Image 1 (cartoon, rainbow, N blue to C red):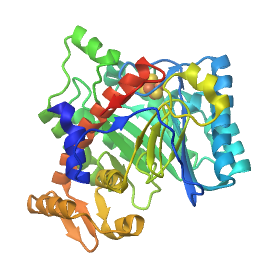
Image 2 (cartoon, helix red, strand yellow):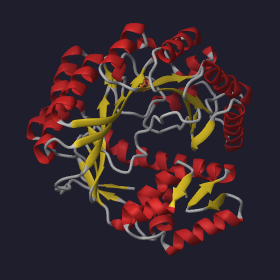
Image 3 (tube, helix red, strand yellow):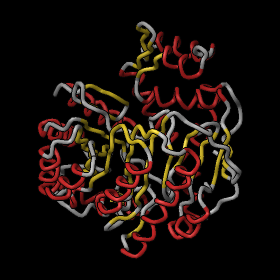
Length: 423
Ligand code: SF4
C-alpha cells in the first residue's frame, strides 16, 4: 500500500492515473521568466550523519574548488538563456554550506553581478560552524535568513543521531545566530527519534521558543532503506517510534509552540507572528543548481545528477539534468496544491491568478469532505487545514517523501545517469 501513495495522491489531486515517470530527455525552458528562485546545493560535510537522506560527501578542498567552478558554469548557462533575470530568492542547502562559506559568498557575488537579486538569501548553518565571525561575514555578503541544523538540544538524542556536538554547543550556536540580527533565524529540530519521549520533544521545542527563534521547524525522522541508520538501530535492537507515539510527539510540538505564541505556518514549521519564512521547496517554481538539485520551471520538473564527479565533469557542457518529467497544467496545479496543503492554506483566488482557472471540481469535493470531517475550514477565498487536517497531511507528506526519496534518490545514488525512474 505504502508504495502506491504517490499514485493515489496523483489521482486524488490531479485526477490522473498512472505513476510519475522520470527519464533523461531534452527540456524546453521558458524563454523569459519574469523572475526566478534559486536553490544551490553544496554537498560537503565534516562527517556524514547516518540518518541523513540528503546528497552529501566528506569535505575535500580540491573537490570543493572544482565544485564551486561547476556551479558557476551551471549558473552561466541560465545567464546565457535568460540574461539578467530578476532573482526573488536564493537558498544554499546541503550538505553543510557553512563549511564552505567562501562558496556561499563568492557565488552570491556572482549572482549579484549577473542577475538582479531582489529578495531573501538563506543559508543552512551547522552548529559547529556558527562562530560570530562566520555569521557576520554571511550577513555582510547579503544573507538575510539562516537555518541552524540543531536536530535536538538533548545529548542522548544527539548521540543516537550520530551528531558530532553536544547540547551546550548547540545552544551557544543558536544564541550567536539569534544575536547576529538576521531577519529570520530558524532552528531545525527532529522528532520521533527512537527512544525519544513526548517530554523530550516538549523540552526541545520549548528551549527553541525560549531562545526566541523567529522560526522553528520540527521534522519527523524518516527511516530510508539506503541509509545506515536503520541498520544501526536494528543492530542495537532499538525500534523506531510507532505511529501513535509519533502522533503524540507531533501534538506535543504543536501545543508547546502554540503556548509560546508561535503560529503554525506549515505542517512542520512554527513562526513568530510577522517573521519572514525560511522555505525552499514550497516555492511555486525554482531553479536548482548543483548535484541532486531539482528544478521546477515551465513544463518540466528536472533533477541533476547525484554524482559529484559527474556533475563537475559535465558542467562545461552546460544544462543537462539527469532526469526530467513533463508536467501538464493539471500536474502543475496538483504540485501547487500539494505545497499549499503543506502550508495549511489553499487560497483559491491565488490559484485562479496563477492557472487562470478555478479549483477543479473533484478538489472542491475533496475539500468539502475534509470540511465535513473537521479537517478543513473555508473562510472567504481560502481553505485552511485544521489540526486534524494538518495531521492527515503530515501522514501524506511523510509517505510521499519516503516514496520519492527511496525511488528517485535511491536510483540517483546508485547510478549517475539513471535511465528511468517510476514513482
Ligand atoms: S545532517 Fe547535515 S551534517 Fe549530517 S550528513 Fe546530513 S547534511 Fe551533513
